[in-house]
Each structure stands twice: as C-alpha cells, then as structure tokens.
Length: 247
Image (cartoon, rainbow, N blue to C red):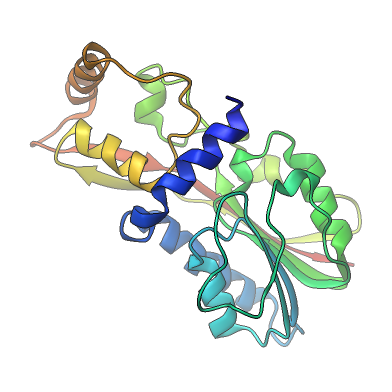
C-alpha cells in the first residue's frame, strides 16, 4: 500500500473520534481565521477554497465568520459535511486536483505537511487566487512531535516545514503579512494514551508496519523513561502558519 493510501485509510478510520481528540487542531483553525480577519479587514472574502476540510472544523468557522457566496471544499478521505450541503465538493488528491479560479481566499489548516511537494501545491493555490486575494495556511514544523522523533519514529509527515521555509515557497507577487510558530503540548496518563490520541486523530498513517507487542512495550518503556514526569507524558505539536496577500 502506498503512503498516500495509508494516510487516507488512517484518516477515514479516525473521523469518528477526530473532533473529540483533535484539540490542538481546533485551536489552530481558530487562530488561522483570527489572524486572517485581523489582516484582511474589509476584504471581500466571498469566493473561497479550502483544502483538506476533514471533519469541518475550519469549514464551520469560515461559514460563521466570512460572507461566503461560493465555497469549494477538497479532501482526500472525508464525506460531504451535513452543515455545508451547498458547497462545491472536489474530492481527491489535492496535488492533482483541478482548482477553481479567481478565488478571494485559498485556505488550509493542518494539511500541507502531508503533501510530498508543498512548493508546487502552494504555487497552484496562489495561481488560483485573484489579484488582491488571500492565502492562509497552517501546517506543522520540523520540531513537531519531538518526543516521537527522539524515540526514533520514522512515521513523520513528509513536509514538516518551518514558518520561514513555508513562507519561502510563496511565488513572486505575494506579500507576506504574517508567519509564526508556537509549540503546544498535550499531557497523557501514559504513553499508550498518547498513541491512542494519535490513532484517534488519524495522524499515524505514515506507519509502515504494524507493531508487535514487544515493539509496543519497548516504545512505552522508553517514552516514559525519557519524558515521563509525575505520572504524565507529553506530546508536543509545533503548528506553523502564514497569511499572505496577492498583489
């Protein structure tokens, strides 16, 4: 099975538990909208494309906070959203998808890290935006899940970009309004609970093989030994984001 197919299967299995478990992703979506509105005061944001809508955390905020007239939604694995029946759904791999044109806004939260060629995708999204329009992106940086990295995990998303690196992929003719990064840690009662969190949010799709019981026991022992404190273990996210406007 290809890496893309494993990611698709993992997210599909995680949709039922995603909203209850994806606490950091909720904060990321709220922050992305808040930053966009702060920079795009008075902008016409009526024709919008969202890449990787998933369970609709960001989508719901878009519909609540922006005067949207036409909403185009893409996801690799998700079904249409019950609260957005009139959206134009464009399912499939965003890297090969035909994009709408003359957008006021192209936006995506917590998705671009899964893209093998983020430079090409950013260029395509930027090309789809009209002059004066906006791009709002969030992903995860190279220090994402440092606990797992320290334990030798090879299951990381393929494009963990720093805020500077992501901003560096903007084509000419764009003005960067904001970029940033902020680590956010969740704490769990045990390493197994941290692994369950990863499964419930679908972000373990890059794992290339199932674990044996011995693998699991060794991982949990090492995780607790290196990072455990007062009966808890951390899992640290590194969100990165940018807001940019087309000249």
